Image (cartoon, rainbow, N blue to C red; front, side, top):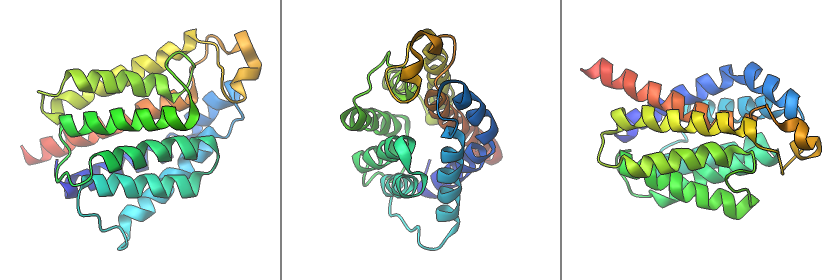
Length: 214
C-alpha cells in the first residue's frame, strides 16, 4: 500500500473514529471519566484536518504516521493523547523511509509502538488498557508477515478485538477505572476498544481500496 493509498486509508480511519465517539463515550462512562470518546473524536478530527491540508507532505509512510501521532498528541490531551500519540509517533519513526505499508512494515510499527507505549505508561498485558488490544495485534502481525496486507489486516484487527474483549475479565490498575477495583470486571476497557477499532477501520479501508482496483 503506497503512500497515497495509506494516506487515504488513514483518512477513512479518522472519519470512522470520529463517528465512534458516542459508543466510546458510553463505554468510558461505565469505567472511566466519560471523556475517552470525546478525546478520540477531537484527536481524529484533527488528524482528518491534517490529512486534508497542504502542510502534510511526508516523504514515506513512516513520516505520515509520525505526523499523525504528533497531531494526536497535540490535540487530544490527557492520557489517551499521550498514549495513542506515542504509538503513532514511535511506530512511524520505526518505519521511517518505507515507501509502502506492507504486513512486515505494519508489524514493525505495532511492535515498536507497543514498546514505546509500555516505556511511557508502564501498562502491560493484563492491566486492562489499550495495551491488551495492541499486544494481541502485534503478536498476530508478527505471525502473518508472509501474507499480503489486505489478507493480514482483517486477522490483525480481529485479534485486537479479542484482546479488547478479554479486558472484561481484568481488574483495572490504571486511571479512574482503578478506583472501581472488582467492579471494573465485566466491562471492556474503552482504550482497548479504540485500538481495535483503529485497526478494524484500517482493514476495511485496505479491503475497499483493493476491491476498487480489482
